[in-house]
Length: 303
Image (cartoon, rainbow, N blue to C red):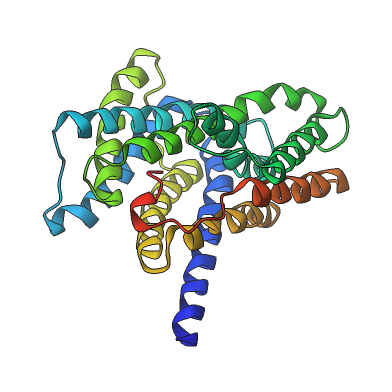
């Protein structure tokens, strides 16, 4: 039993380290000037191939019921197209470590929305966590405090659009489920849908590019980040079913720390003491806001 527990902890650590790595890789992917929807299209191509290779051999392909199609559209928009567009816009201008911090704010954004929808109960401790999160973001935005260039502050709201979309996506899945599909199958369908929707946007806005025409560092980073995300997501689903969704969700803390670690190691980023204080406040807020109940496998988030 003890060996199994440590094995699950090791898997959790690997998931956090891997997902954290996708943040600096995403920043590198923008280094050649590729625009968001061109990057998103090829990211979805790779995710569709990887997730399809995992789910199709099990006989679980695309489902075309009305509920499934609605799920694909909602998750493709809120889980990929909108948040990834704002991610690539902001990560090209903000430090990768800051982006890793902001992505952990999803529970704090989801809580007040869920409260208004009657999906969560009010609690003073969770309100305190929300306040800590707001203070953390305020510290990041304070002139000359954490960001190396004051002009970067303008992109903080853009960077927070992604966590808002993920929060809305999670609330949608919590209320309506995955239309009878398992999570990997559901994400495969959402990835294919997103790819189909993204192609005309990329072509129409002139953002489409051929990654094979000049395959270099940026294209390698995009391919690695996309494949890593798809594989790690499948492993996350496995862990959630083996150890419970609450245990698996703890990887979000590791993702934030790992994202900052990889940004320092790969990109050479360095951060002020104010940013480290903001990180402590943000993670403390997330810990207070996150629900304490034990979730079952059917409550694994779609993204």
